[in-house]
Every structure is written in structure tokens, then in C-alpha cells.
Image 1 (spheres, rainbow, N blue to C red):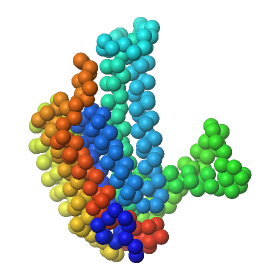
Image 2: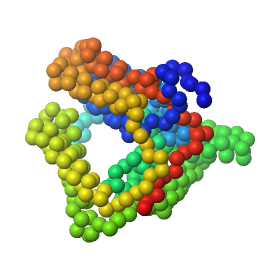
Image 3: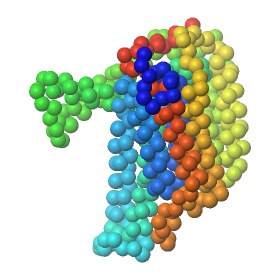
Image 4: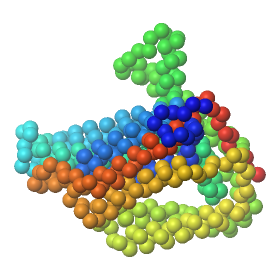
Length: 375
């Protein structure tokens, strides 16, 4: 087997999907802490570079372009809303427009002077949200969703059928677009374009993607996913309550940790307590279900490198936001050029390491390891 250019001698193989998700979440945290367009552009560049270098030719990898398109749509919609719903905040007028007040709604008007401060404020916020979406899209493009579900702890297998549908619909959508367009081109001799062609493709694409996801969910159900084992009803309610409480606490703790205006009691203390409760629920739930595994995914040096690069990016930008938030959030009043310090930029560029220090992905012709069967 030949070695791919740009690697350090590893043979092609698929990395653990959880490693890619942790890497993407680290970059998502970095993007959530800044509105600086230079830093957000660096995050986008890192994500796109790694995806182009390490994605396979499997169906879920083709969905990344849809996430990029979704990010562009977010930016355009947010900027347009700033223009339509009163963009006259600031002193630098770019386009003078008449103001249309809405009598039935207090303090709300349409249009008005379009200012640079208002447009940039909307653009910065939209770019941050789009960057976070594209980071999650990168994880979906790099990680095999089936292998990810296979790696879940036994406590989460009861909801794995619903999870597999949610995770596989969007990647299968990209593959369905290609298959439906190819079929239309073979039948009609022309691929077609424009609104009319899109209308003819939308329904078959959605139907095909949903059918394939449901077939995958049905196959998982036939292999024992969702089994409760020999656990009693009381134990089921106990483990379920611990898991729900832990997950809710983790959501609150992460939000409070990222948002500086939330009371600190809901940040680290809440997150630690939620992790303890969730871990306890996972441990109790896993005792009642035994599952066999054929060739389980192993963690190696490459997986550790991927996770470390994402964690470094998120931690460095987070710490910078606590020490020097001015460089991470450019001033709009007064309007100033974005300033960039070297520390957060180096932290973000650390996320580029997987593009060079990990093995290339295995080709689509390789044999996919089967899902494990519930015992």
C-alpha cells in the first residue's frame, strides 16, 4: 500500500470518529469566544485545510460543502436583517435610506441609514455562528457516523436508533443529490439547471436520504440496539434520571462557562456536578447490557494528536478571552480595525496539525467493519 504525500510514514487508515469530534469541538469553542474576523478566518482556513487533506470519499464527506453553503446563507441573512430592521446605529453612514416606523411595535422601524458599525456588528456575529456551524460540519465530514455510534457507551444505546437517523440524514442527503442527478442525466440526457430542475430533484432527494437512514436504523435495531438487558424498571428510571440530569447540567455549565455574564455558580461547579451525575448514570446503565464487538476501534498516537490540537486551540483562545478580550472582540464604537495578537493565532493554527501528523484516510474501497451485535 502506497504512502500518501504529506504524511510522516503512516499507512492509510480511518481514525477514531470521537477524536475528530473532540478536535472540532475545540475549534468550535475557539470560534465562540471571538468576533475578530481575522481569527475566525483563521479557524475557517484550518478547518477547510484539514477536511480537504483528511476526508475520505465516503458519502458523509460530501456533506461538508452543504455546511459551508449554510454558513454563507447565515452571513447573508444576518447582514440583510441589519439593513431591513434598522441599521442606523453608528456615525459612519454608508447608504442613506428613509426610515419607516412601525406604529404597532414600539422602538422598531424599518430601514434607516445603513452604517458601517451596524453592518460590521451583524457581519461579525454571523461569521462567528457560521464558523461554529462549519466546524461541526467538518466533524461530520471526517468522522464515520456508524463507527461513532458503535463507540457510544451502552447507556446511550437506547436512543441510538434516533441518533443514527439524525446523524446520517444530512450526509446521505449529499450522496442522494449526486445519485438523483446522475439518474436524471442518464434518463433525459441533460442534468438541467435553475429553479425548475431543483423542484424536480428536491422530493426524490429527500425521500431517498430518509429511506436510507431508516434502513440503517432498522438494521441497527435488528442487531440489538436499544436493548434494556436484565435491568429492572426502577433501575431504568434511576439511570435515565441521572443521565437526563447530567446532560442538562452539562449544557447549562458549558453555556455559563462560555458566557461571561452568567453567574459563576452555574459554570464550573455546575459542570463538575453534571459530569459526575452523568458518569454515574452511564456506569449503572452499562451493567445491564452486554455487547460483543468485532475489531473495536482503538486509540493510537494519531488520535491523541488530533484531540490535543483541538483542545489546545480551544483552551488558548478561551484563556486569551479572559486576559485580553479586546483583541478577540474588535471595537465598533468607535470603529477600529481588528487587532490580532500572536497567542490566539498560534493556538488556532495548532488545529492544523492533523493535516500533516495523521495518517491519510482509508479509501472507500476498503472493507467496512460490521456493527457489533448485541449479546
